[in-house]
Image (cartoon, rainbow, N blue to C red; front, side, top):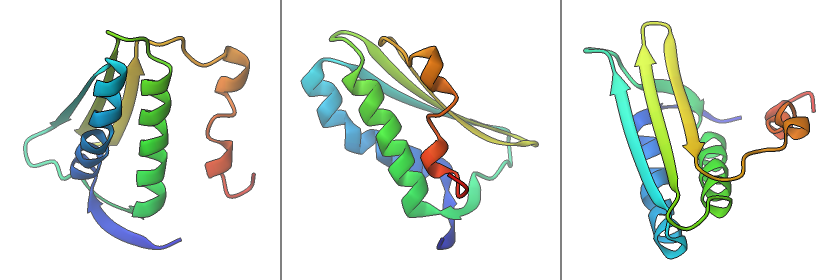
Length: 110
């Protein structure tokens, strides 16, 4: 893994911007909101290419499985305890039997 310090808010905004053409083509409203406490940094040390790949996959799947006129919302929130990224859509969702395994490929012990 190649760690580097990145601004997670900027990375998420960029991933959303790159996904906008696909969302428009499919008639899906794609929106991002970045919330943080005053003075809260969104800088994190990560393998940027892997995190960006995961974000792009989440967005692609959310857009692909959301019907026309649906919505995909991305929320980045930060507080004193950490940073959280949520992707919510109005699509069909992930089968409950598969939900516990969706991040298995990111687990180094997989």
